Image (cartoon, rainbow, N blue to C red; front, side, top):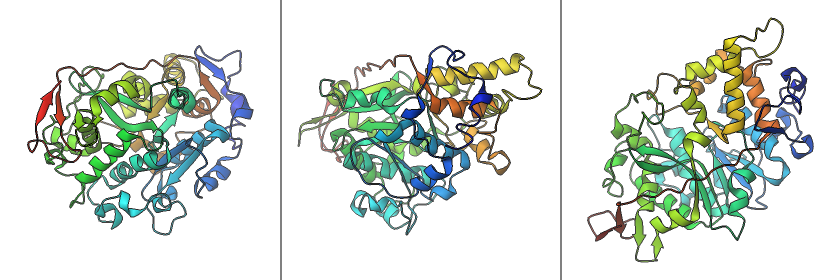
Length: 421
C-alpha cells in the first residue's frame, strides 16, 4: 500500500479511541493493500466480468489524461471495496487496453460517438453519459463519475438491498430538486442489476437525442423532451448562489436527466412498461444533497472555500489548533460521517464562482488533494479506512398531478394521446 494510504496513518492522530462520532475503523484485511502504483497499473488493464459487483467509470481521453486527484479517487475505490468488487476504468482511446469497445459494440452508441465526431465544450462528460447506462444494462453494477470520493461501501449504500430478493428495489439513484417542488433523478451514481428495464429504456432514449447531431446544443428542443419544462434548480433550498448560466444551456447539458424525466412519466402501451409505477415501487432513492453534494451545501458551493479548508495543515510542526483549524476538522469529520459520496464537478462551466475540481486540476495544485499533514490527506485516508455507522434514509418521492404520457418509448408528444395522473 502506498505511503499516502498507510505510512502516514500515525501522523493523522486517529486511533480507535479518537475516532469522531459516527465512524469506525475498517480492519485492514478488508481492504486492497496494494500500492497506488500497483492499483493504477491494474486499472489500466481489462478484467473479466465475474459477477454483477462491477463499478464502472470512464474518461474519454484515457487514464493518463486524468488529473492526479481523479486518478487517486479511483485507486481509493479499489482499495476501499476490496476483492468482492471489480472497478472497471474505461476510455475511448483507439487501441487502448481499456477501450469501451472491448465491453460494448458500436450498436450501443450514436454515430457521433462511434465516428469521433462529438464536438463542443462537453465531449468528455457527454461521452460518459453515452456509455454509462449501456454498461450497467449489459453487465450490472454501479456507475460512479470519476470525480467522486467514496466514503461508504457500495454494499452498504444500496447493493445489499438490490441483491436481496425479498426487497422490492431493482435500482438505486440520487434525486435533487431540479425544478421547484420536483425531485429529479440525476446520473452521477446509478446502481442496477443487468438487464434492468428502466436503465435500458433510459439509454435508448438518450441515444435518440444524438441522432444526426455532434453536441448537446438545443437538446431541450428535441421532440422527445421539448414538452418538459426547462430545469431550474431551487437554489434557495440548496444553499446555492444563483447559477450564472441560461437555463436552456443548463437543460441541454443535463439532457440525460431530461430523458429520465420523460421516462418516469411514460406508460408504453406496446409492452406495458409503466414508468411512474416502476420508479415509485422499484427504485431506491436517496437525497443528493445528503449523499453527494453535502459538502457543497455546507460551504455555499464555493470551491475556493473548500480548497482553503482542505489545504489547511492538520498536523505537523507549527500547527495551531485555532478557529480555522477547527472549521477544517469539522468539515472533514462531517463529510466522512454523514455523506456516502462527494462528487466534484467541473460544470456546467461558469455556473458557479469556483469549482474545487478546477483548482485541483491546475498544475500548481496537483498534489493539494493529498499533501501530507493536510486535511485533504486526512479526508483521503478516512475515505478508505473509516466506516460510517449512520443509517441511510431513503426518500419516498411522490409526483402528484403530473401529466403521464401514454405512448411508445421514442414517440414524440403530440403524435399520440395522453393521460393525466
